[in-house]
Image (cartoon, rainbow, N blue to C red):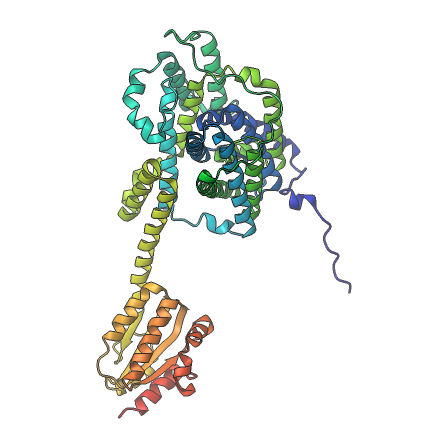
Length: 562
């Protein structure tokens, strides 16, 4: 019988499972996602400091290449709130340090972020990226939401974003309030009202963001034209038409370290953002995405976006959910969305130039409010006081100190608390007994042997995963050993023996041998045995004290008593 023929090459296997089975749904989903993406891309582009065009082309390029080469067919990728927050900080810092080439270096950071994401994908780190405690993720995302809200206070009040980011805005708050421009405040408030109060039935026809964008612009050109306070309403202004120019990477030695660190942070944040959104897409469509392939697609999208002057992007929850609800089922929807946005950019930049910045500030501020994990904030303290404190710490560090420090310190503390809890639980599985006192689950024959030992035979039993935190319990039990003539180390139920725990066992065996006691090590197998052999422990004991069962070891220990 001849072997089955190898399957023919399928382009869809490379290009994110593009399918023609749901053309109508994909086209409608793509167009709907594009309608939602337009106001968001404009708002994030302006908020980042790179300009509306950078936001628009970021939405097109990240979305197109992530759809083509990613691993989640229904995922919509574009500039998001978290990515914009980091981009804002990157642009502000680099342009202040190097006014002439700062923006070019910021786009280079976007390229670096893409390269880091591609690297993460090739190293198959996709499943590890989101393995962080929820308290840390929630605190981090909520902190980013608060940053976005704070940074929009200036534009919301008709002013430019003060220098110094979050702290600069908070320090300048009294001045921003006293110099607020009423007309632009009214436009921003109307925008928020539309976003919050649009009825559900209307949302099914047109997204609130687009309604706010159109209505706010029309009001600024009619009833509220002229500003009413003697000053013109601040608008987006002219957006360059045509395709974007190539932005070659630009590096400056004094800022090189900053660029690399920011590239890594932006890349990691994009990975988290995209993969969390991919999980949501999978749960709705009941499919399974390829996380590593998704990172490569996201990386290619950001790399190309940076090359053509676009800001960084990632998987967007709102766009993805709307795409799926509208019928999108394959990557064709993401491609359609990118092409529709491209046509809008090439043909409609004159209209976009009239959009008031206050309207975009209202849209961005609402995104910040939505990013904050209000649900968990309200009940975190009921679930775990320690978990709630970690979340509050991460929020504070994210908003006031540094994104890297927030995640690093949050993960470190959460892991330490988890290890401490696991260690205390596992420590209870470290027992040393010399009588059949009922604490150990032993056959009656072995309990009888222990009783015959009359306190001179000690059974030292370890159970479960012996992580490094358990080493202290091993030492404690070992130090509590009084006068005995024989010790049986039972490792039968050990599922994992960490290096530190293995060294603690070795130390206990060596000290027992030095005191002239009989020592038996039984039940070790698999990786546990290999680890002890590599430590050289097996070379210190005769074979008949190793290659025997626990029952035989207890018999020999009792028989050898003086």
